[in-house]
Length: 334
Image (cartoon, rainbow, N blue to C red):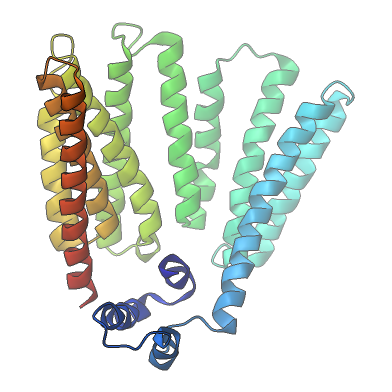
């Protein structure tokens, strides 16, 4: 119920909604009267809110499904179509979508959606060129060129979803480049190196995103996009710290120190500056994983009691973390 209300209601209604829900938890609202209280507070979505939510949901679902339909159509009918037909089926929709974006204006939500669609179709076009002419290019080059090609559209659109797509393309290109050549011409090998590169890439993106948002770019302040990048950054450094713990004799020994630095920075920024409970929850989960890994690795005997101890530790830390996050959320709502 809460996530639906957060989507269809304006952000300034969150504190009112949280207050009513807190009263309900405290027993100050009679059973069965919660909906009446929410309606009285004016925080339940109305017909206009639901219509706007459904319009945007269907719009972006249509964008993604249209792009997927083009790609799968080629995959299924590849042998039955000629070269010119293949290119026409991609280039005509691509040009039409760009014209539509120009007519709608990039400041409108429909214009941003059409630029997102054109970015996805551009990827299909590059893949078609590579398959048709057998250029010999490696797979990572497809994603690197794709990211470079849609960068102007991302700059013009000022749309967080398109920037997330662009960042995902960079991640895929880096991963595929590593699989092909290793890093720095093959001088550095091992999956740990790739994880460090991806961690650095996503962490720099997170810092730049938050910095530009705080510097006045309001369109970057949509929290869902920041949370996606923070999840990627936090997940990678957690994996690196866990690898240090379990494979200390082979690891770089930088995972645990930088994990501690990441946790401290996340606490300071998202507890006192930006205040984002979701990112704090990512930090709590990361702490549970790393501490449980440290305890499990420190116990040499794999007995039933050991697994019970680790399980109780995870349950206890999860309960404590959940209680703390609830306090933070209540403080933020007030």
